[in-house]
Image (cartoon, rainbow, N blue to C red; front, top):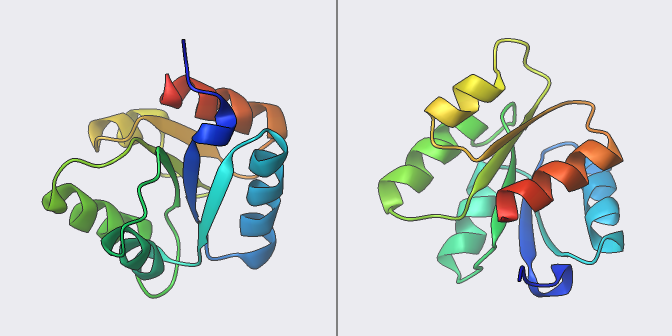
Length: 124
């Protein structure tokens, strides 16, 4: 039996304040705990400080440390939670995400139902 959403923590890595808060609101309403990060560097810092999310939602186009470099550093560090790529970049696809070790893929703008469906699917 899957764990209840309230026992699951999601790390939302998104540089756009409005998008990050919008994702957080939807996920919190669905019962998840949310850790927000404005870029890959901030997300890595949270992980290094002991945050243990069950899933990471990762924007790819961000300042400071983008999604590609975040993925590279996270994968070199060892085992990590499943990652859902969230992007508006037309060159990326679900196949690209899977080939780079990611569990899921969402094209922006992300709809509520699609978001919750992909989160549930990737959490198992």
